[in-house]
Length: 390
Ligand SMILES: *Cc1c(COP(=O)(O)O)cnc(C)c1O
Image (cartoon, rainbow, N blue to C red; front, side, top):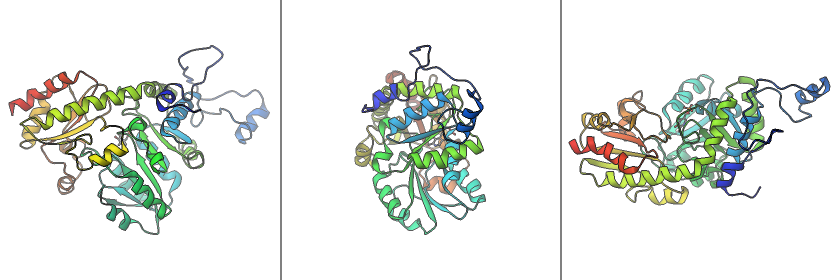
């Protein structure tokens, strides 16, 4: 189908049943009945396409997978129980004992634990490099390296990596480039078009967009997704539930307008924060003051929905801003219609040792805001209460 992304978001993967429903049905069934013993045998032998069992074939989950794959410009997609199980399914699907991966050091904290604790236990080692140090990426690659893993923009410092450049480096060494696209979503950034091989999602964030369900996805070529990743899912079982899939693909329908609105609010808020006398520094890819602003504007459609900033002072001043909010929710989640605020040093990054935290720029006076869809004047007023009092 030759549609644009906004149209795929609404019609991608649509399938109507004999009831003629306009909005997609949910198929809450664990297994599927066969017309005959011969058909059952043909399905299990892979000789006839069709549903078997919802651990690996469910029509509702398939609609989500096809819709997201179309939006990312990928051939195939697998929906998973969470963003973490999407990363796990990919890694165990494509890597084996003795393999090595190179990852940006500024990745989601739990992803780091997955690599350093659980993959390491299986003999798969990870080398971490600074996100924008391309020399370090190149030097970390060994003959055993199979995969480069990156999150851009990074959390919470919003640093931006050059996906096309990393893709070239990966391919020169016969490696896959994997991009966790949870922050931008395919609406703002299409890693596959820039040369990446695999896109990872935590559907929990912007794809749902209203903080309801936990889920994830892996997007890539048909060969890689169907053989390696769905094969893992079929056997190991961290599958997406039909209900969650339904919530997610209804979320995808409004994703293009939501991402634009999140970005508009975030840019307005970032500019306002930058001008506030109690704010030391603002980190937002959409601001000209951002170190990779040019690259971000080339690679992303907008700056996205996350803004981080340092208040003048330390943890006491940062916490004062957090504790003065009345509308904004204090939670470490992101990608919600509600504006959310978190103090990374004592929450999302509290398990990181102080030295690494300082090196990563996660100081005690840093706050991260996931900018929601409220009137931006109300978001500003809620933050101003604490900031004006500093
Ligand atoms: C939340 C998140 C994950 C993990 O996803 P879950 O759905 O919580 O398992 C992975 N990567 C990024 C960038 C995230 O923000």
